[in-house]
Length: 131
Image 1 (cartoon, rainbow, N blue to C red):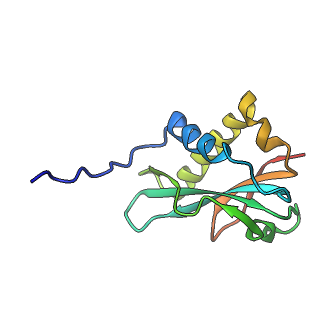
Image 2 (cartoon, rainbow, N blue to C red):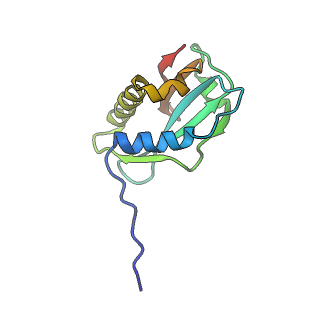
Image 3 (cartoon, helix red, strand yellow):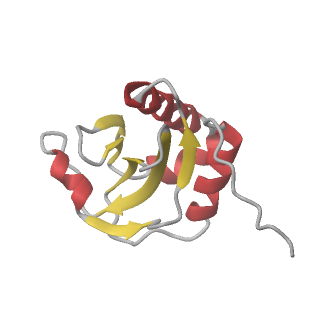
């Protein structure tokens, strides 16, 4: 009997992250998308984090609740990674890699929206781009 292979979650990998994101972006986001957000979750397993991609129908620099106006979500299709240096370091890692992605040509699909944010679902948002 074959033993089922466990999916090993590794440290943040830019190529893996962009492959995941580009696959999501192959399909058009809803027409009324105003902004996008990268929701970060702390998983039950120690040192494991998940990133969920959402599109929203609003964007407001003065009120983080815009990120709750979801009109599209990657749902359970998340990018998982491990970071043993704490949640602050995990957040910084996501921020650096999203900013790196936004410097690339392929990010033009995201830059057409009013704003791009990221953050833990129970925390403050970091705005990494605004039109």
